[in-house]
Length: 112
Length: 116
Figure 1 (tube, each protein chain N blue to C red):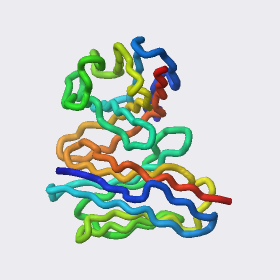
Figure 2: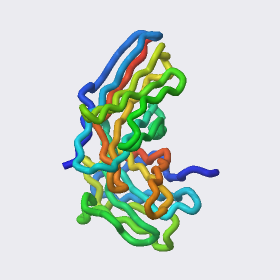
Figure 3: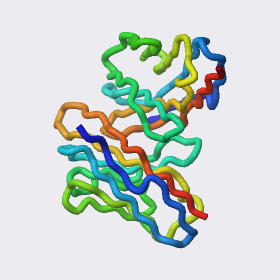
Figure 4: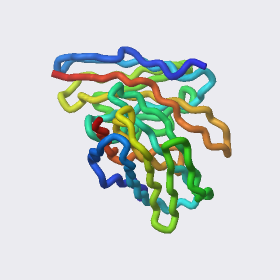
């Protein structure tokens, strides 16, 4: 069975703190893709990153970074020096057969 | 490039009424998806089209939900009759279809449905 678990339902931090959102996945496929999406209060899903199962290199994009570890089936997302505009629900998703399996999301609240 | 368009953005109806949502995918995208996102949950796939054919509708409640993509471009999702538990955001997404190459999904803004 394929599954994505985001154990953190809600995280609240003060602006400028670093925060890590956890994502653990299950799949028997050897080829798959992992995603992170941001959903601000407006509701639209904003694509953040895609990583395929053969690329375990960590990625950094500005204040965002992602740590992919196949050994622990995790794909964690870190925001450095958080800002109020980062407040949103963040979803991790798995795609192994052109269908996305979604986690339940983590609501991130950044307090000024 | 224009994104995925959806209308209406918001809809409020009474239970047992009917409602329809429209989606226009990105030009050239052969694959179209409808998702239901209940508050506090991740999106759930309702139906996936490849051109005008259905690839997967295993999670579509077919007793009340229907969807079509007659010309392989835009699509309509209908609920008839609506129930209270249908209150959700309905998201449309589209992607290219290239055999052997992964093509990511692009999402529309969604339609927020409230059933009273």
